[in-house]
Image (cartoon, rainbow, N blue to C red):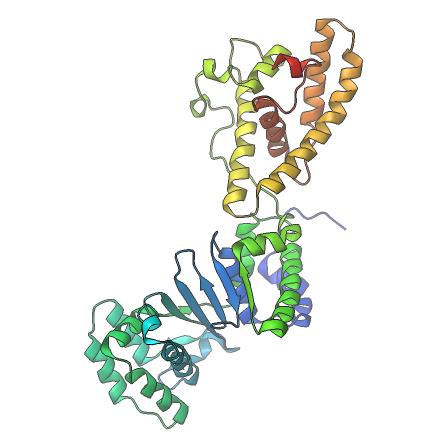
Length: 401
């Protein structure tokens, strides 16, 4: 079987995995949940079938309630004035408000955004009035006028209209300002595209995502049986699914020319770092001269640091994972160092330096896990640059630095 060089397209993803996803009971609502789960920031919490189909509590305390209204006909189907799903959703949100005590009602609408996520075309007069109101092109009286003039033969729709009309002016204003309809074509597509971005076009994105979905589905079923809903904070997500998420690779992030000296410090400052000192002392770099080779090693070290920070920003890296990564680097370095140390022992200084250079190059060729040579090399260089260094090249590096 040929090795993949690029991730699957969405169509190929469906061809390869649709049967397996259906077997898991995967649907648009859960695809919406996974999409928002992958988009979450530190401090956020997401729930499934708790306050709504999907609910997201942001770090600042604001809550987004999402109702997924999918149609197999997609945009061929319209969400009109007489759409039962639309009115049923509004009633659901207002009923939730009415269950709160007067004390807790005060910030209910102000702290929440009410989102209908649908793949249908919206042709709804009341929502048009809401949008105009949000844009300050209509007044509260216009909303009430529309509601008072609306009629339907469907009892459930008229019950929902009655509940909305019963809101006081301040309540109706806050509610209308918080309502939004998000149009999408396919939540599974949105989910897969987001996974590609988060996994930086990892060639195995489809398999990693399907593994993640399988574990999430299993945990969702267990959680719903236990307490009726499934909920994860960003921290819980990273911790519980670490083994799957760790399969994501890190891609280059630096937007700099590899040997562009303008991106680095003054040569005198460069030479004062342990990383450069070590390389100068063994003769890999020339003291007092900053070459393209110098900038290449600086680039690799910075490449590693920038990608580690990016991984942390994505909440896919913590101290434990980084420590494990760098322990693996030290293990690989130690295998090379032990061999060259034996060859350099009781030899001349020139021989020690010769073996140190060989040790350096042999180590730099060893990639760490699935990461590329710049990331791996940058990790070794970063470890050699610490104060005191964690690794070195000369047989006597521990006493020298």
